Image (cartoon, rainbow, N blue to C red):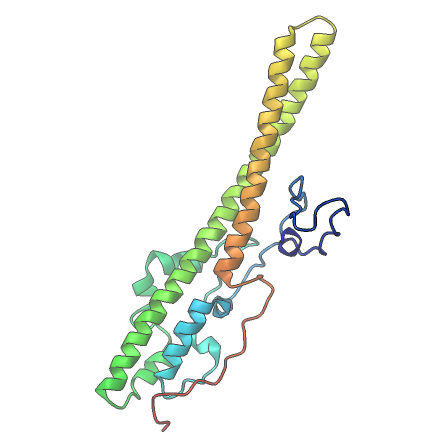
Length: 242
């Protein structure tokens, strides 16, 4: 699983001496950098999520032109701004979703389709599907923004923890040297060793959190950031085409 997450080949088979039914746990966390999330990732990639797909298909089924291009159903915003960070446009949408997306998601295509609904029942179906679509899309956008923000926080925390570990190692080396020449007590050296171990554990915890965040982000995006959105299947419309 970690190999797939890091875009690496699968690990080699476990040693023959290990029981075949016993899962082999890694002894250390991967030291490779996590795959980057590219800048300018379009909102349309959220169509890979099963919940977004389902809401989109329900909305398509209420429209006279339900087989329109998928991009027509998604706001023209980027999920990511600079590399690995959330875009300002995503933050603006989440700060004011009604103003940004509106009752019809502020998409001209959907507003045009609404004008072509033939009766009250069709309009009611459209309104219900639109509200569900809006709720599902906003949930997906919020989950992506949360995961990207957490990714940024963890990256900043890691840089600080690496600095702390470097300082702890230097202090341990210095106190070892001082102890061996009789310039300090053994306890001082032992305390420095403990501080270094604590710094290593803190960094390892951060690395684990980054791996967990990568999984959370992939789940929010509906998959790897490099995978395209799926093709739109044919959906029967409840409306007669003009």
